[in-house]
Amino acid sequence: MPDPLHFDNHAEVYERARPPYPAVLWAELHDLGVLRPGIRAIDLGAGSGLATGRLLEAGASVDAVEPGPALADRLRRRWPAAVVHADTAEQVELATGFYDLAVAATAVHWFDLEVVVPKVHRVLRPGGHFAVWRNAFGDPTVAITPFRERVAQIVARRTAAEPPRVHGELGTDAWAARLSASGHFVTTHIRDFPWSIDMRTDQIRDLFTTFSDWNPAEVDEAARAVDQLGGRVTEHYVTPLIVLRRNESANA
Ligand SMILES: C[S@@+](CC[C@H](N)C(=O)[O-])C[C@H]1O[C@@H](n2cnc3c(N)ncnc32)[C@H](O)[C@@H]1O
View: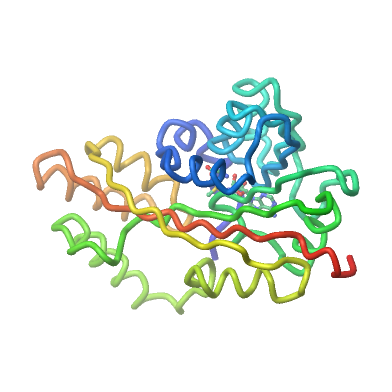
């Protein structure tokens, strides 16, 4: 079972290893009018602040919610302008009707949605938005690379040995349906952002170490595969974005 504190146990690696979200995603949030200077935003499951930092740079004031103590500490040091709550999205105490935008970046699959969705509805102002995205590491629409073949072999061995996980494996439309199922939100926008990145062995080692479902032996094997492929691979990723609007007729 993946451990939500996995990220906190690797806080330093997490901060250097996770690639930023693509610039086009931030441009899209601007173009949709969801991210504007002066808004109040809340970043749920903020990690080391990949989204917190960009929200601040866009002129938002930001509350960042992160239960991992080491990550919360890093957030405070790296982004002193953010108000950091070292707590879970389920338990954190937040003012009602205060925020214009709630964000969950590669984090929503960790939340108890029965608690968090009504809570996000409550803390948003009328007309507020909930933007949910994740980095999917791998892009099924791109021809499989030799490195991805090796990754698939490692994952296949693990999934043959373990019962299948349901955690985080929904597609984007299914996530949008889950997030709007209670009627608190209406999905207004879904878009996939594909992107690519060249990574060295040490970068792949760091990045895969941050994956909560990869054990150290598997990470070693992935790093060895990069070495055998010349020490550098091109990875194709996709970042699906779901934008939901607060449903004003829903009861909290
Ligand atoms: C994959 S990381 C994403 C971090 C960051 N948003 C980013 O984009 O890099 C998932 C984060 O969710 C946090 N998390 C796990 N369970 C949580 C919960 N119940 N409430 C809030 N955050 C949670 C973890 O501590 C971790 O920092």
